[in-house]
Length: 456
Image (cartoon, rainbow, N blue to C red; front, top):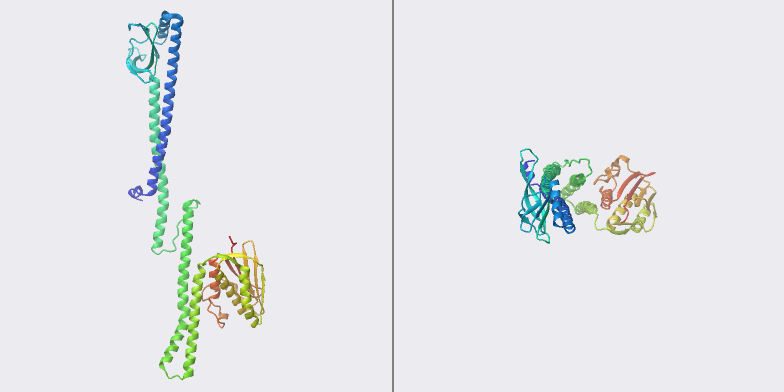
């Protein structure tokens, strides 16, 4: 995949959006951490200074100005490093005691804290000093003297700088890692989508046997590939069926059409008496009716495969009506039509199609039975079960699948009326109703069963 093309893919754009959202959320979280840490340090040092200042004020009240001076001198001597800052000035501004040499100049914030710079000895023999930041609060004593108490906050400033640098580095690494991870994920997604696109392009170019490769990970892409492959399988079967139907029509209708043409040609030649001409027309009419019946059957099969309008259907009552319709036909042939119907078994189906399928099965049973045709409707764990069985010659097991195809007639049936579409219609109705059709050897004869799904 070309980089420029990859940059335009939706997966990469989605990666950028997710990275931006993740970076923003990380920035908010780290900023909150930094602000909380800084505020905690500032509050802690402010509390220490306030407590120290308050203690000195209390000492002034208890021991007077001289006592306060001695304490300032003592504490200043103890902290020459200026970690703690003390300064006592007389009312006229003269420095009296402390560990800094002048009253500091700096910025007073809204809360009255003085922020200023101080020089601190770094502890080397050359007396080198470095600038530090100080924070202090001043207080005017009752006699006009001024007291200053503070702390060297350079360590806090450096800590805050380190925290800020860590936050910035963390942000940068977070963005880089999330972007790298997003690119890897998007490349994987784009790769699998590209594989699907390449396969569909080959299929569009006529390679109908191509299928999308499944990775066996049972993820959404594997499910999509499975569904697309199943759809392609069905389309391929439908195309094969259409080709088969076209071939069957061309093969099975060519002979009757040729006979009709020959008869018409013979009539045009003339020299026929009235009776011969009448017979010729009658035979042509019968042939035309046969062709119309065949085309109607093909149309019925095509409509049955789509299922049609579905509704709650009393299967027992539908089969009972068909049995009553065909019972006189069976009796005319000296056959017994036995029905064992469990009442009130309901399916979801098309009444007209189901009645057509039952009629075709009864017609086939009566056509081939020697003594008896048995019809039953029962309920099983899988759903309502319709069985039509006869005691005729049956169909060899190896031909059970073949006789369900259009225009297929076994050799022993070619002397009987029919067009080889009866069982094809039954199969089409079963497929349209998502029912399972099975042909099994009877004892003797043929046993045809249709298992309908449970009504929802």
